[in-house]
Image (tube, rainbow, N blue to C red; front, side):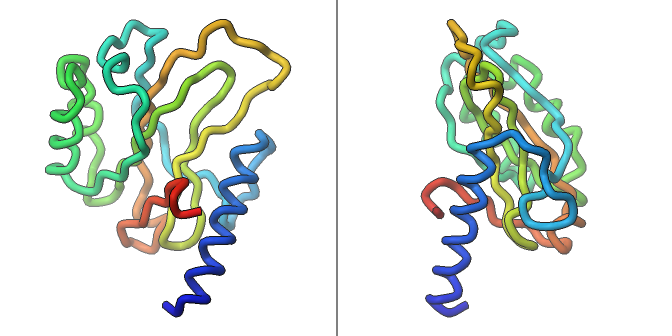
Length: 163
């Protein structure tokens, strides 16, 4: 891929991520920006998931193998005891990848979006901005993204640094 093509891709990805982070409008179905995957787990300080206290904040991560899942859980003290490993191991990684990310949650929700045929992003969708929360408990969400959504290939996870 040429430098100019990578530059255009980065600009488009940054614009999509900025747009998605700034609004909670319905997503366009069938193209870039489409929500993909199924949420398979969610852990929060609000639910006394104490292991979340020790990891906030975390960068989004894409897990494509059982070894990566086990390493990620082992790196986060208390996650295994909280049943996180079992939830993540239940996902068939021959047909899916996992995207895990965290965020302070008041009215926000998370989603995984398809940025291009080979790129996904973990994003946080703002809730009602007129609501002021006294506390926004840190939340970690896990998403299973079918490989069929990314042409059967393990996608690249775009992060803020890519924009």
